[in-house]
Every structure is written in structure tokens, then in C-alpha cells.
Length: 86
Image 1 (tube, rainbow, N blue to C red):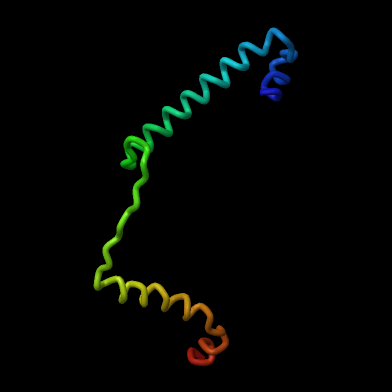
Image 2: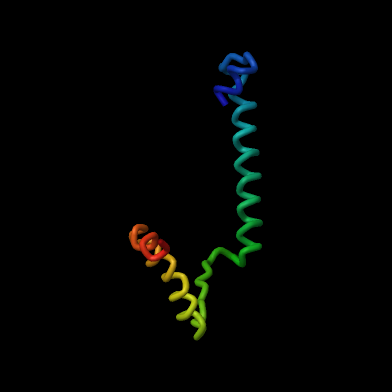
């Protein structure tokens, strides 16, 4: 707010305290409302918390292996690949 006031040429003083306080309070209330709406969309109600549970699928193991293979291949030295190609 200091930067905004400096850009607008407003001097900080007694007259600017009330508008600044009102702006801060209104902004915080709006932010709290937005966060509350977001939490409701995500399933939070009456405070509390959500502990999601994920079921294991038999296809998770092959998927994990397929995800690890590129990581392992990326650690191989490149000269071995060029020797095989050449």
C-alpha cells in the first residue's frame, strides 16, 4: 500500500488510516470467502478434514515399472549408444 500511495502521490497520515484499514478488512473478508468456497468445492464441510483413500490397482505395478525404465535409461552413458549405432 505504501508503494501504491507513493505512486498516486498520497501522503501517509491520519486521514489515510481509515481508508487503508477499510481496504485491508474488505480484502481479507473477500479472500476468506474465496478460500471457503474453494474448500467447499473440494469437499470440506463444517471444519473437519478429508483423508483421501486410494485403492491399489493391479495395473499400478506395470505402470510404475514403465515410469522407472526411462529414468534408468537416462543414466546410461551416451557413448555406449553411439558405439552401437556406428
